[in-house]
Image (cartoon, one colour):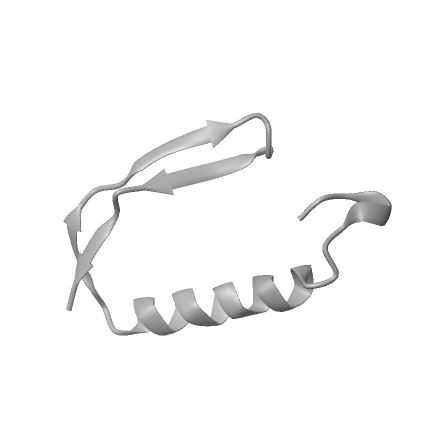
Length: 56
């Protein structure tokens, strides 16, 4: 989302939408079909998650 004067003005809304989406999906108690690959990205200073597969 950037930082300082270049910070994305839509960041708060995007984070809220992500939170709502994840809470609603996980409230349905999915089964994990495939474990995700997880790693750390030094460029964005955050985690990445790839390949997670869920089933309901």
